[in-house]
Each structure stands twice: as structure tokens, then as C-alpha cells.
Image (cartoon, rainbow, N blue to C red; front, side, top):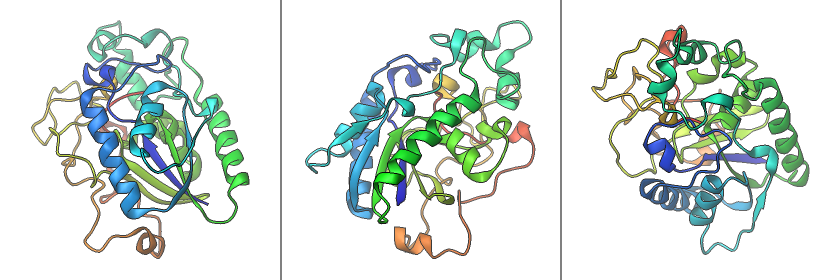
Length: 276
């Protein structure tokens, strides 16, 4: 099975930088345009034979738009839902930053050790996501291209599992709205391909330094928006090289999970545009 992981399009809470987590929030107009672009990329580069999706409307709507006219049925799987952020849900990034001790800063650096109050434990999230992917894989043992439309937190947790790294590294990975991440479990092929998306203002994930602008000169997007200064231009990260194709990607001697390596240290974390 080749697993084609897509994050949902921008939601209306992503747009205003609110933590959404378990809240069922719909797509923004930009999110719908991103889903249409995702559909074009899927038709051009993959032979999708089945599609599984989080039951949350931002993921369901993304999948329905992307697969419109294909006849491919959507199979909702509750275990693909976004992780809960507990007491932070419905708050903006700035509101959480303003709390005693700036818990947002601690969470960005160590999400396993410093979770939101009442949030879903990351090992529990990983357990249910592994279960869902395992069930999907058991139904598609013949090498099919299988689409999974889910969430930034869910995809990032699964990548930590594939890479064998701590969940404290969760937000060092960038997963943009409607980006594509490809795996043949347990092998990871590519992460956060955004070449198919319409041009939008540069956004970046976590600003752990408290700065309001990235090295690209853009304001941080925050999780709602996962906002953080990104040392790499967003036009660069996840872009395909000339001559890229899914088949060529699989022939690479090692997994290429972004067009540039991760920078060292938690202060340089590299997640993508909007938060769980």
C-alpha cells in the first residue's frame, strides 16, 4: 500500500488563529480552493483506489471536493479525528500565550511533556492512528494508492511513529493545509508537498521566540493557525524538483521528507501553516 496522507484545507478557525482540536469547524473559502487544487494533484499524480477520512467536517469536505466526479467512496474512520487540545480549544494563540508562564511556548518545545490541560495524551492519539492505518493496510495489501484525509496533529503523530522519534519533536515537522505526505509503511517517502497549492501569503508555524515575523518577513500564523517563524521560505519547502513523479520518488535511495533538512534544536521547529 502506498499511503497518500493529505491534511484538510484551511478552516475558518485556522484563518483566525484559533485552536480547534476536537471542535467540528468547516472550511474557509481558501480551504475550499486548496481542496480543489488537491484534487487536481491527486488526479495527475496518483491512481487512488480508495479513500479514508476523518469524520470531522473540515476533512470530509476537503475529501468530497478533491474527489468530486471520481466515483471513489469516502470511508469515515473515527480514529482519524484530530487530537483534542482540552482547555485551549476555542482560544486564540495570543490568548494562550498571555497565560501565566506562556504555556504555548512550553507546548511548542515539548508537546509530550507540556500538554494543554485536559488535552488528549499523544501516546493515545498515536495508538488510535496506528490502529486506523493498520486496518486500512490490511484491506489493501496489493500496493494500491490509498488516500487518507486527516489533520495536522494526526499526521505529525504518525510521522513521529514512522521515524521512531519522541513526540516532543512533533511540531518540528511542517504539515500545511492540503499538503501531501507519502509513505509505504514503515518507509516514509516524502513530507509536506505543497507544489500543487494556489499561491497564498507566506505563513509559518510556531514562533517559540515570541517574534511576530519570520525570516521571510511574514507574520506568524499561530495554531489555529500554528504560528511560528519559519527559517525556510514557504515557497521553497515541500516543492517538487523538476521531473518529480511518484514513481521516481520511490527510487530515491532514502526517504526525502522535505526539500531541506530540519534545523537543529527545538527553537527552530518547523511545523506548517495552521494548528490542530
